[in-house]
Picture: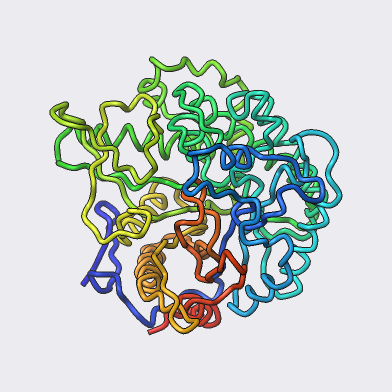
Length: 485
């Protein structure tokens, strides 16, 4: 059987169900795992850390499943050495972690907090000592609450403060970080945080969401410029985007235009300025009733358009859209919690249809072909741009049997998506590595502790870590760069 993407002129051989075995990845291909600070660290009130928007959001009744918070999470802050040894036991070649801005600057401004710098310095040194490359994400959603009180990502001053923060951590760790990632999924920060209200800070205003899009883009550029000035080890620079694979429900021109509009909001609003130095004209046209985009200043696009050594790609599922016919309830099956607001400003005519299963516990469809399609499409749009899969994984309802977790569904998920990644490489995509989400079960944002993504189980009562079968499978893969049979 073969698979391919229309228009590429290339194909990759394999099983139609993406269950291939024995595939070998290039020797230089990196296998790692990823986490985020608020999801695992805990210790939210210790050693000078200030409150973040997620502290505020999670402590607001009714916003997070079961009233869960990240106050303790996986207690990674106090179990650092144990977790570093765990990573080593899994043969990880790289570890993608995020730095908590309020642990470095409690209010988002001013001098660095020495205890915060010390924690991440110990983490970085511990990784290097174990032969694991440190991949640092500057922002994985935990904005200092003090900056949100001043307007958050709706205002330009937050982007400017982010540049100052980047310089501080660049000066502290700029001799040791292998890859700097500026932002994780700015789509979520902007549209779920300020549009739909499903994520912190819980705002439901379409103009605020679009303002946040731009100021996050600006923050990305300012951060790279700042770290580039102070880093001494010639690091790589990256950003991680959750780019959407959007498919039309029918072959109609209307549905094709629905795809175009969602891709403009979900993908090109970020890849345009970051990789091409311009916002797409159709994005401005689609949203002209919401804003005139006057918050984009004349030199902003020059700042945002910084060369990237690697583009981080997060992928979990696909979207199926059409123009809503208006007869009956409108479906909003875009994979995100519906709390009343919309994460798609100006796209009220677009309907997101439910897709066939199977599904993960998040309700997301399992579609490995979408990953291949996305990578090959990006390769066509941005020839020569190296890429990395910075998140891919699945939540399942794991069952503990005699102290073991036989998560065959997760192994199957990973196998099929790694097969998709391998096929993309066969088609000429410059794919440098794969980071499984996530190293450990953790605080899954507004779903609290009800969803488990980890290849390592965390007992939230005892905080004991247990490697699932998927962790053992992944360790074999990372040791050999060969997909286990």
